[in-house]
Image (tube, rainbow, N blue to C red; front, side):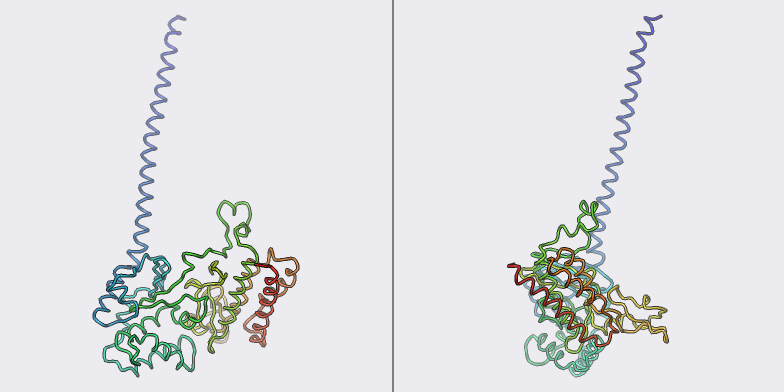
Amino acid sequence: MRLRLRARCPSVLGEFILKCLTYIIVAFTLCQRHICCVLCMVVVVCFLWWASSDGEKCFGHELVKHVCQEYKEKNVAGDMCDSLCNEKEIDIGSCTSYSDILQIFQNGDLVFSVQNDPFHSWLIDSIVEGTKLKRFVFDVDKHIQSELGLTDTSALMSRIIGDFDLNKDGNLNLGEAQSIWRLLKQPFFLAFYVFQDSTAVPHLNGSCGGISIWHRPHLTTGDNLYHSKGPWPLSLFSSHAYRWTLPAWHKRAKVMLSLLELVEEMYEKNGVRYHLCNVSGLTLYQLPNYEVTLSEEAMMLSSNQVAKRLANISCQSSSDCTLTHQCQTVCELTTAQCTGKLIRPTLAYVCDIMQDYLLFDAPRALKSTLTRLIHRCQNMSMHLPKLDLLHSVVVVDIKTVLWNTLQYSHA
């Protein structure tokens, strides 16, 4: 009996091990199939998302084809049309941004901007052939006044006609007029065009039809200097991990000086006030001279443009009158309507950035004074008496303190 048991035990154990191995191999095979299926699904979803981001929304090649056909028919014009359509010297590149108001394509240092749903908007808002120049100038003048609030647009109108009159004969043909009209309807084009003398604004490299072409060298040479979120592994250890990746203090101080100078210029430019409605999403780039550069994401808008976007909105408090966090207007309680009066100036939000970006490791001799000035700046309201004077004084005081420190840094 014992011998029989001894003979069967190894056999039963072997059968058990064999079954276990079989189950493990089958399970592994099934799991491997499932893993392959999941990976295939992920690849397909990513491909569809990538394809839809350019193909279903932006239609880059269809857009160029449409504009070039209009150029061939002389319905549009532009100093870059020949390079885009005939010589094929430039390519629109890939779609990098798509929103309800704007489409952006990028190819190297060139950025191509066009208003959203261009085929529809261009069709319903086009200039009829035979429109007299006087009537066109009147319509453009009315549009600029509505967007900027200018009472005298003569200087800006002369500049526009001079820049887009390709043969410089002092007149505009249908194609030139059509292109001007489309570009002026493009979000942020007018504000950027007004600030072409500023190094902080992308340089208008040319246009074709309703496509504006901007030169932004920082896209390939710059580094991101401001971000309140650190790299994922570092952010696990500290909420301030982003500070570990920032450049030296004196370099950041130069960037802040550049931003202060821009905000000072924006406060009133030719009688118009401008605002950065997305300061929290502002990207600062490390150019050779550490100057700030803007993109459409910063939402540079005039006071009139902010008011227009919030017009006819009913409100019970100012929180209902919010275009963005940085462009919030006052609610008029007597009429329960949003007004165009902003609560805080852009400078106050820039000082919020400055506190986070510059103050934490400021030189000891400077820190107390800079802290006081930044807090004074953050408390600024658009309803303070003598705001114009206070705005100028705060900017000058902060710039002076930073410059006096930088001149001894040997940087």
